[in-house]
Structure formats: structure tokens, C-alpha cells
Length: 369
Image 1: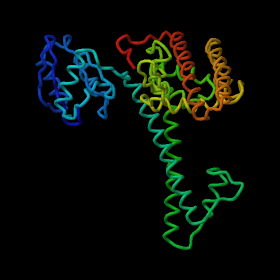
Image 2: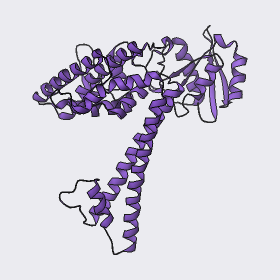
Image 3: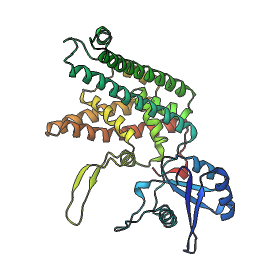
Image 4: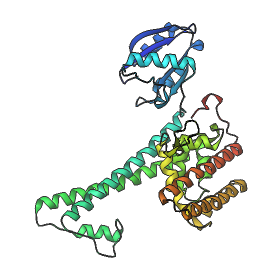
């Protein structure tokens, strides 16, 4: 599927495979094609996840057609196949879908998708802010200008120091003004998006709000991290086991074993990168001994005793795990990654418990990650 066209192929139940050519990626041609193919309740459709999002999925669902959005990285590829066209891809999808070899992805509902886009917009703004700060810092460094010794970067004192800088050359003065303005713009943009996230959380469905509040009982997971997890994962109970959630985050070890040989490598990173980033960042908090501070106690207010007990168990377990691995001489980055993987297990436990308390049931149709 592309922005303007869709390549269509049909795999019949008797084993025949038909190529229907290309149709415009517009609602009316799609509707005509579905009527031509037969009764909607007898049709099964699929397409690869991509930049076009889930618009086609919702169109087909409204027509009564069962549709799956499949993970493109998990589509089987024959060794030695070096010819790739839209028509061949459509035939391959039809054949693999009929045989059950494709893995469907979780399709968020419109409210989930809106929250997720808003959270990802904030992540993009944070990256832009970091780039703007780096440009300004490297510009000053090239000209031998450094902040005062005891001035911490990007504090009020640091901002006042930037305002006091002057260059004799007009060109350098223009560059300095542009870089400082861009840093201020990035800061305002992040504040605006965070305000929009606060408003969106209040208007979000109960499932998102409840899970996000429950996850904040964990150490290292504050509001933004909890909302990111809730929007990226959706219903945590759709995973039957926490190992599936770990695999979904791409934070499990890769493996290349054969016969008596067992070889495990670095983490696969073949999952949700936003979820993986948040979890690994939160894992750094468990290098400290177990403790419930004022901020964490405030976040835990109103949560059930069972949820708080899971959070307290996580502190003991993950802190011990961190120190044990560090004592074996492991690199800190690898230790934190291992702790983050286990943290996902506690995230799953709290999410499932909160959903059970709120009576939120997972859709049977959308079990696959």
C-alpha cells in the first residue's frame, strides 16, 4: 500500500492465487472492490503496517471486512529472492495470510492513537531541543567561550550568562541570536506539548488513565513515562505472559543456536523503540537502595495495596539484581538493560492488576503484539 495506490491480490480457499492489479488508495475504489469480491463477512484482508497508518484498516472494518495489519519485518522471505515489486508483494501477502504465517500487530483505537501521536510529538520536541542546545554549545566552544565554572548548563544563571554575551562581528551576533532563539523556541514547544498531554490525560478513556496512574507507583516511572507506556502498549493484559511484553520491547537476547551449540548475542531491538527507551531510562533508578520518598508516596496515593506491594517488591528485586550483576563485573549499560527487562515484568503485573480492578477486558481478536 502506498499513499496513492494499492496492489491487490486474492488467495482463494481452493489454492488459486489471483492478481487484481492496482487500485487508487481512495475510499470509493476500495468500497467497489469489496463489493466485487463478495459478501463482507466472508472476506479476510491484510496489509503491511507502514506510513499510511490504520486508515485502510478502519475503512475495511466499517465495511464489515475482517482486516489484519501485519508486521512487515515478520513477513517470510524466501532465500535467494532478489526481485521485489508491489504485485509480487501482494501475492506473497495473500499466500502467507492464507497459510497463517503472518503476525498481526495491535491496532490502537482512535483515542489511543491520538494520545500516542501527542506523546511522540513531545519526544520529537525533546530531540530537537537537544540538537538546538548542542549547536549553541559547539558554536560557543569554537570561539573559545565557556560558561563560568560553577554555572550548571541550562539553568536560570546559565540563561542570564547567554544573554550577556556579545560579539564584535555582526555575523556572529546574528548566529548567536538565532541559536538562542531556537533553544527558547524548543523550550516553549515542550511546555506547550506537556500542557496538551495533561489536558489529554484528563479526557482520555478510563483504561489509559488507570494504567498510567498505576504504573507511576513504580520507582523511576513518573507521569510522562507512564503515559508513554500506556499509549505504546495499550492493554497490557493482551500479553499472556510478561516474556511476550519483553519480546515486544525488543529487549530480549538474540540467539543463534544449532545442535549442541548455544550462542546468545545482544538484545534484538526488534520491537517498540519508544517503550524500550522509557524502560531502560527508568531502570537506572534501581541502582539506589529501596526507598519510598515523598514524590513516590504522592504518586502511590489512591492505589490499591496489591499494586503498591508489587511496586515495593520490584524495588527489592531489581536493586538486588543491579548490585549482583555489577558485582560480577558486568558493564553498567548491560546491567541496566537486564534490569529494564525485568522491570517490564513488574509493569505487566501492575497493568494487568489495574485492568482487572477496573473491569477492563482485552479484545479476543487483537491478542497478537
